[in-house]
Length: 77
Image (tube, rainbow, N blue to C red; front, side, top):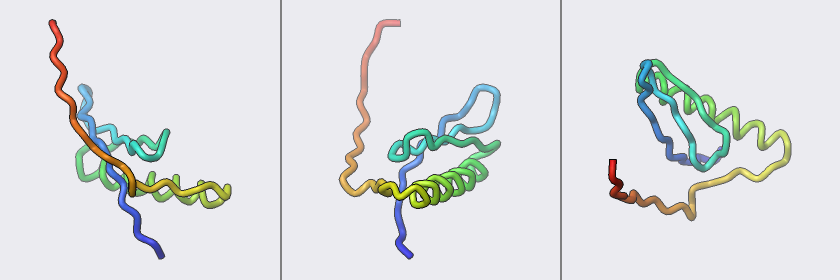
């Protein structure tokens, strides 16, 4: 069994809870009522996403060559 790491982004929603996005897996988005649930839901979503890729004979994306950078942008509001 191979272990893979995926970065997740959690966005707090105005109505409550957290939306989770997995940038390396397009369309892999989930939700949880709190941070712990959101993280657990993300793990399940990633596992199902990867199982689907395997079932269809598609390549499993990794974050091996991924770079991360945060940009600061100034705007007039």
